[in-house]
Amino acid sequence: MTATSAEARPYRTVLVWLVLATFTVILNETIMMNALPRLMEAFSVNERSVQWLSTAFMLTMAVVIPTTGWFLQKVSTRQAYTLAMVVFCIGTLLAALAPTFPVLVGARVVQAVGTAIMMPLLMTTLMVLVPANERGSVMGSVTLAMSVAPALGPTVSGVVLEFMSWRWIFWVVLPVAIAMLVLGRRSLPRSAPTGAGSLDVLSVMLAALGFGALVYGLSQLGGEGPHPVSPAVATAVGVVGVAIFALRQIQLQKGSGPLLDLRVLRSGRYTLCLAVMCAAFMGMLGVMILLPIYLQNVRDVSVLQTGLLMMPGGLAMGLLGPLVGKLFDRHGARVLVLPGCTVILLVLLGFTQITVTTPVWWILALHIALMVALAFAFTPVFTVGLSALPGHLYSHGSSMLGTGQQLAAAAGAAVVVNVMASRATSLAKGGENVLAATAGGMRFAFWLDAAICVVMVVLAAFLPGKESAGRPGHGHVPEPEPEMQTA
Image (tube, rainbow, N blue to C red):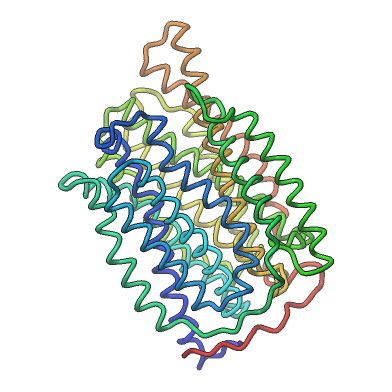
C-alpha cells in the first residue's frame, strides 16, 4: 500500500488500535512487580518460587518471539491481532481466578504468548503501512506506548494493592483487553498473508531449547539456593541450541523458508542498530532493577512511593517520542542517538556515586534524564534498523529485535543483580553495615553497566545521518508493499 494524504487516516487508525493493545499487554508485563510480596503471603511460597512469575513470562517470550517472523507472514494482520488478544485475555482471566500458585504461573505463560505476538505485529505493520519519510514520527508515537506502559505498571499495581486484593490487578486489565480485542479487530485490515513455507517443527523445538535454556540460565546465574537445572549447564545448553538453530535456519533459507530468517543480519546497518538497542536495553534494565531495591531496601521508601518516583521518567520518555520522531525524519539518526547514548553513559556514571544519604530528588533527576536520553536513542534505532531491510524481511527483523531484547533483559538482570550481591557480600564481610554494603554493591554494578554503555556510544557513532537513514541497506530495494483492504 502506498500511503498518500487520503490514505493517512486508515493507516493511522490501524496503528492507534495496535498501539493501544500493545500498551495493554506491556503494562501487564511490569504490573506484577509490586505484587510479589503479597503473592508470597497468599500462596505461602518463598522468594525463589515467586520469581517464576517473571521467569516463566520471560522464558515464554524468548521461545515464542523467534517464531513470529514466520507466523506473521502466514496469517493476516487481523488474524494475528485476534489470536494475540484472545490468548492474552484467556491468560488474564485464568490469572484472576487462579486457585493455586502453579495455575497462576501457567496463566502468566498464556499471557506471555499473546504479548510475544503483539510486539512484532505492531512493528511489522508500521513498517508495511507507513511511508519511509514518516516512519520516524510514527515510531515516536509508538514509543509512547512502549515506554509509558512499563513505567505505569508498578504505579497501577501499587494503587490497586493499596486498596484491593492482588486479583484485582488482573480484573482491572481484563475489561480493557477485551475492549481492545472487540473494537480494534473491527478497524484492522484484511491484509493478505505475504506467504511463508510450511512450519519446520525441528526449528520450533530448537528455538524452545536454545532460547528458553539461554534465557533461563542467564536469568538464574549466581542466584542463591538450589536450582531445578544448573544455570551454568542451562546457559551452555542454550548457547549450543541457539547455534544449531542458526545452522538450521541457514539451511532452510535455501529451500522452504526459515522460521527466523537470519538474512536480516546481512544488513550491517540493521545489525549495528540491533547491537545498540541491546546495549541500551541492558543499561535501562539495570536501572529498573536496582533503583527499586535501593529505594525500598536502603532508603525505606514504600512500594507505592517507589512506583510514583519512577513514573515521571517513563512519562517523559513517552511524551518525547513524537518530538524525537519528527526530529529523526528531519535530521537522521546519528545526531539524536549519539547525544542520547552519551547522556545514558553520564547518568550511569552519576549512579555510581550513590550512597545511603544521596538525596531522593537527585535519584529522581537522574532517572528522568536517563528516560529522556533513551527516548532519543530507541525511536531512531528501531526505525533505521527495520528500514535497512527489504519489505519481506520486516516481520523477521521485528522478531529478531524482540529476541534480542529478551536476551538482553536476561543477561542484564543476571549481571547487575549478581555483581551487586557479590560486591555487597564482600563489603559486609569487610565490616560495612548492611545498608552501606548494599549501596556499595549497587555502585559497583552501575560501573559495569556504564562500561557496557561505553561500547554503545562507540557503536552509535557509526549510525547513518539524514542522507541515508531511510534507505535500505546493501543497495537493495524493498519489495512492493501488499495491498491492504480496510474492511
